[in-house]
Length: 253
Length: 253
Image (cartoon, rainbow over all chains, first blue to last red; front, side, top):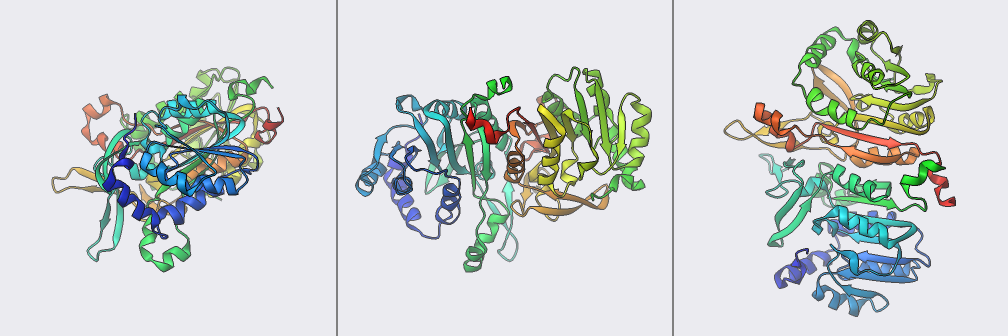
């Protein structure tokens, strides 16, 4: 069972303010990268895991999807999502156990939510089973370099107050992280790049592309503080495919 | 053309001393991880890129390979390799352009050498073409977290002289790095995790497994300084497969 931090009123209010900022890393880096990985969605059935306010769900419909369902653990967020996106089916559930999903989907998206899932191997196995053959799992998460430090992600500044470097610790210590983000005690799970790759491969997925987006030069020119993302990216995105033939049987051909 | 630093006498002597140390990261972390990724080598043709003294080549023969060839840019290293490993064919050439390789191989290994290759995309395309269908490309390299900082990999210590954290910078700035390792001016190329994954995928490879080895508890108990590798691993290893059917045609089945 994942933590339902988004139904905490203080977190909810703080998060809403953050998401309303048009110059957030989410808007400038993560969202363009996520949509750049999307296949043609025309007439596809799409599932969005950790959909929050459902704004990506709405976009999937606009891109031609014939059916879009969004799953989120937070009732508060889905209350808003339902009002704002009437064409989408919203399901209030914990995405860390997908056994409640009975339909098949052509594309499963998940934006900045898989770092809340404890058992990533089970999670990707369940997604593999939900997907139709030829289907895609496309997700974004906090960079493993961000989730690594047990005492939280920290930048070190030089004597002039400029960012000198990112303080990397505990990268190889996979597991639970309790961090302060808007409120104290937000529970996330750190996984290394190889943990993530191996879970996807073991579930039968073929990795097609990985992205670690950086700010555009325009963004850096507008506000030089974005340059620090060139030291340590904020996000990791992966596009993985379920082929018609299972990998195990590929050598038969 | 890659730099031929290994034929520099000072580098050569320093490197030899380093490799003779039974408690090096190469012996304790990289080598066991590399061999754990090896498929059954019985009756296989094996190519080792950046083979150095050829000790891995000899081991591939012991594991049943019917034919082993080793490629290295350093004549000095191959002079020793030829004496120590008479059953192996050694080729003195720059692995950054493999157009000289006319034979096909079932498995291509490369241990701690690909970070010297400037054009990784061309390199993995050439390896894909050298491999027989069903073949594997298995390589180790310095961790992208090690190659990232433009002014070199550095640990920061606390007031008691204990390692506090790894100083991560420039991760998203892929490209040339001139570092000091044994001698000054050793040229390497930094690539992000996603650069590496995408080059392999674009060449047609299916990634099967990734490893970022850590020291064993026994190693840490013998010398607690190894614990810092849990903050930042030394190596990245990847096992990639060339399937019988090219990925592009998989959807036809």
